[in-house]
Amino acid sequence: MLRCFAVLTALLCLSTPLLASPPGVLWMQRLDPSALPKGLEALPRSAHSSAAGYCLPLSGDQNLGQLLLWERFPDLATALATAPNAPALNNARLQSGAYTELGTEGLASATARVWQVQVPVADYAPFLEAIAALETALRKDGHDFHAVVLSPAGTGVQDAGGLQLWALSPNGAAAGAVVDAYYAGAPWGPAWDAAYGYFKAVDSDVFLQCHPLPTDPR
Image (cartoon, rainbow, N blue to C red; front, top):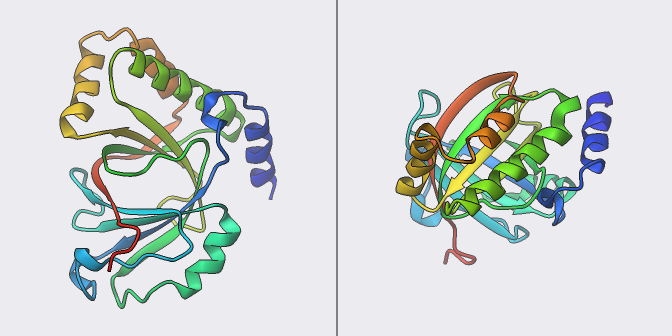
């Protein structure tokens, strides 16, 4: 409870563009694609979600071969009320949980670099401000770049106690160009260093390829 209060206090202190729209909640499920009843072409989607999609791993040593299915809800109450009535996934579901967006929504069709990081709760506000400044600097330098920060709840041991940082680019070439530009001395390098400085630990670092689900998969 004290941790939740500290997180809420940090968010209320923010005045950055990251909170320009109300945060939503992503209900994420890690699935075994080989166990899906009808394959990728018929992934289930709740009638109450405003957006949905799936991501497949491009790199990393964890969750290779797994599929990440996500759905966006307006709040945690709606997500939890919907979860028990979600379409059956047989034995495909390996892990699930809720992730509150600490800022703007953004998961769609993209190549994403995803970090699972540890950031002290007291640093949430300046960390989000640093991410907003980084996003602005990258866009000013011509990169089609979007950052999303997620706070997990009820996700199990794997994601407990940390944050997820999603760096979204339209495709793999654009995602690689961001890393290449950093090592080539990009003008936004200090902005990246400032944001990275809030990481007290990095638990994972992977690339994912994400795709949207149609509004009506039928």
